[in-house]
Length: 318
Ligand code: ADP
Ligand code: MG
Image 1 (tube, rainbow, N blue to C red):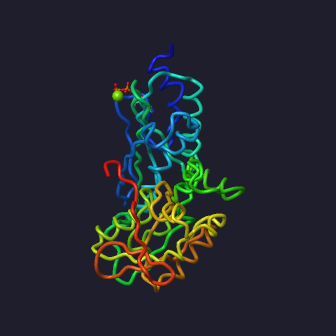
Image 2 (image 1 turned 180 degrees about the vertical axis):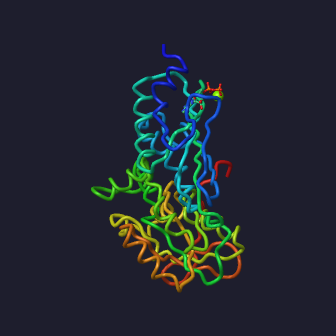
Image 3 (image 1 turned 135 degrees about the vertical axis):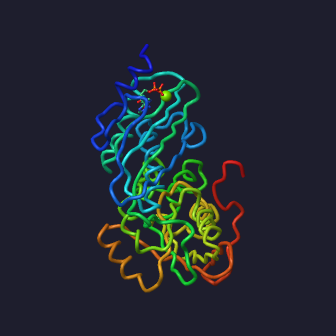
């Protein structure tokens, strides 16, 4: 049986190039870049809630990191260091090795160093703390949306929830559309480059993790504004276009969580800058609505009627 310390040494001790001191001491030592502010976030994935017990360990490793990097992306921050707390019922070395691969692969892609963590025994859960930095005063916040701003989203909305609905038999996807949606569910891509480009251009940003309407509502509340979304303009995978008006697909697109796309607001006179960013990154950016005075979120259908949703998004205690 492998010990806790061998486990850490074997799977979580790859060199940390951008830290003064990484894994192996009581704590890590890092030095922030000059003129920058530190941006910190934490998120937990619990087996049975955020992934199923038979989920691919590689995908769990990827997603545990991706959801945290997505939070840094939504702040316009550059990710630098992460800490990983993992609780395991038992040690399965094949599982560990694949989990670590999924985790490190994504970390390497963004030049992020794993600098510490904690390894304990218990029900399977993974918690990641991510530390990034943004030029002083430039972090993107939820409370910056202003009357007249246009609302944009990156990529396609609802894909992860559509994949889940497909697995449950509520919608039927096939071919490339199904593949895209499953990839989004298991290995979401944090929009790091986009977030950094938006800092200084967008007034406000949030990542869509709880669902489009739920997260738009966070913006409405924090900014003290009303969010108006035109459902027809909300982008979804091409294969879901034909079913976009059917309730299960509409529910997935408007209220499904786990997209990890960014929603951001921009004054209309800066929209050419957004189009330029879209072209530069090769990432679709779509205008879906506008910020008005008032409160809450309204989603309008093609004829200008408000769409009423039973479930507006993900809530652990709702
Ligand atoms: P302590 O008892 O002093 O908190 P630990 O025994 O928990 O130290 O951890 C030893 C070292 O290994 C520390 O540097 C810690 O940050 C690191 N570590 C523990 N678990 C992990 C993990 N899952 N991933 C990365 N580093 C870890
Ligand atoms: Mg410890």
